[in-house]
Length: 259
Image 1 (cartoon, rainbow, N blue to C red):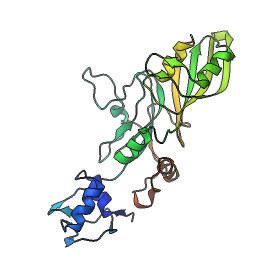
Image 2: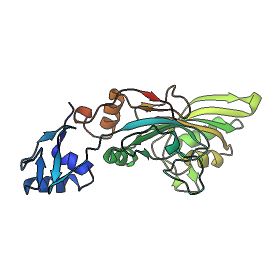
Image 3: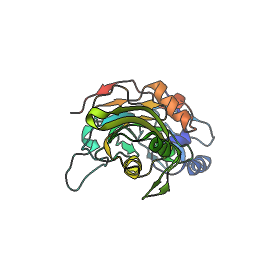
């Protein structure tokens, strides 16, 4: 049985912050299975009944998923215009999971979902600067000097000069007047890669994200979701300075086709 610290369970239920939960415990306002708990460090499992001021908290299991988002799908929980959203591709779960960051409508590839608010917040925080790798196809064949500009940083309309980026696997395709390459960013501005490519005179034809930090898209089919494996979960937690999943529910690696 997996365990988590009592103050984490309270915070995960949305009652308050972890620090405030510790104060509640010290004040005798918390009970586990009907017995008051006033000491720190107590761990509880999924079957334990935790109550604050007599109100039993619902256990919120953590879910961690990756999706291969197709083109034409919005990264949003709802759309007033009734366009297709990523929510329609998610499997049925016992909790609402939200996307970590976003991909624009015409960009496909790796998108993560979770109901672990702390992990989501850290993944998007500039402090941790998780690598984000994309496969890009642009119109025309850029000169090597233009790739050098992209890698060193380039001025874009929204946000000024970009941070250095890694350009690899350049594959010109003169027959179709296009060029494919990989670009790895350490930041995530709105439509950044599209703006960068316009700035060098070679607009994006296709764009696909294939990696976020240690998590890779690999061979996941378009529109398909799967749970993170235990090693993947441990690796992303460690990448953002969180503890491994020893006291978090562990999920098996199961591919789930959308209904």
